[in-house]
Length: 130
Ligand code: HEC
Image (cartoon, rainbow, N blue to C red; front, side, top):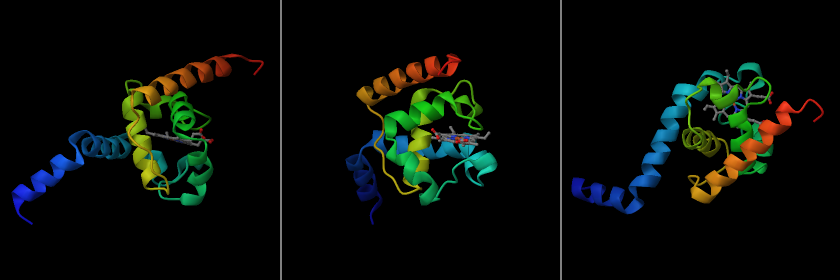
């Protein structure tokens, strides 16, 4: 294919979608793979559809929020305190896409819902009578 045609194709696909995907992959490799590549401490292994199916079924908002807050061996923000919700979400979307699901880049409304779920989850975790 001609080079200019490839550039045109990239333009048509849309910069934001493509770069968000590449970014998610990069973050997943840098932050999440340490545990999710091999399944350290029961971390759901990337590519293991059986392990991911019930998680994916929880939905993008819930799973992104719960992962971000942390659960048991899963450290908050994947153990990277400065990781934004957007970046965590992009990395998770990449793992999901390799594990039998397909989530779109979180838009404004989805990000708001994720933030609300994070707040709710943090309150539950801090409450000893949960
Ligand atoms: C230090 C190891 C470690 C790193 C780094 C890590 N995880 Fe995890 N993660 C785990 C473990 C262990 C679990 C399983 C927790 C459980 O259910 O006991 C898990 C579970 C999860 C879950 C499922 C949460 C749920 O509600 O059951 C998600 C989503 C997730 N990780 C996303 C990520 C993302 C995205 C990154 C990178 C930004 C990341 N993890 C980095 C160890 C890690």
